[in-house]
Length: 514
Image (cartoon, rainbow, N blue to C red; front, top):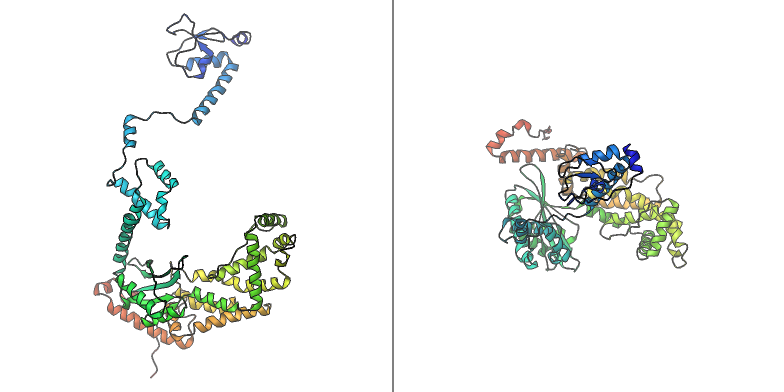
């Protein structure tokens, strides 16, 4: 009966409830004479609904039982209202104590202010950001958003106070760590900044008390003197002395193959080993001295340049890649100091040869840049010879793990398989492989270097004396035994008890023939 009455009855006009926000009150109200709003009436059927003040449960149940159509409408309105409230920003008023708290800035001497300043200083130093970062509007807005009470110091504070303080703190920690070293290795390099200012760097490598490898870049100092061996040797000595390092504890220093660096190590009478990555780079550069290679590599550089400075050509290149279902890769350029970048450039051009030819063939001025079949033969010969060597430069130039013991096994691998001449190799591939092997074998033929590499491989359980020449095995065994005995004699008595002799390295050394 209620539903039938609802269909034929107009909505009755009643006075709305005072201060009500619930959607259900759209269907209920009060008579005008009911000033205290005690008797709730349904606008649809004029029935009186018993409900306590502020409670809408009975009202909703009345709609659900007697006015199902309007109950469904009520549910939709209720859902829309909830969604609108969520999307609107909160207008909750901040308390007086909260307002006063946010308005009072941190004192520069407070712990919170120091913590934030130290974090900003660490960010500048670790990420090598310019000090002007603290003056930029975007950085200031970010800091203010994160903490309104923090007032960022001036740029001068970071350059004159915060950064020098961080440097002093880091230096003390490093000094405390390296002063107790029994032995250490080092690497050094001379390089120039973008403004052509020369710098000399020194890095130490050591094993700490927890038997973990550590590397510390001690300094990169301005080096305005002439780059002669004597000046470099003196600069390295001063760097060692400034950090309290004893030269007699230096087991080896690694440098590049520049004549002045080699001579500087000799002047200081320091044991030296050249960087394998740099040596491999020179070997490949030596093997690349061929007119055919010069022409093909020069063509590759022109190709990369023609696509790098033309947005129209880049767009056409991408369309050609999609049409020919080629990988959507950009062309790579060469870095003169990294041979791997040349190989990567050549490999990418071989991969994208069809797309390159398709784009350039439509431009009369650029058709001459399309590689001929002779050019592609040269590029493929270079890529085939150099591609297997890509991973070795980085692998043997790492500082997070021991790499010197890899040198002899890698040289053996080069000679036995990777750079071994194969029957299907072209004349150019044969020449490249032969030149690289000849250069490396010659540079690592020095007896002192061989002895050092043999010792390093000997103590590596993965290699031992597998790659040591038969004539040198007995010598290496005796030398290692002598060094182990010397170390055992130098060990404090309490350490000898902690490390029993039976745990020390045992060698089956044959007796010398009289």
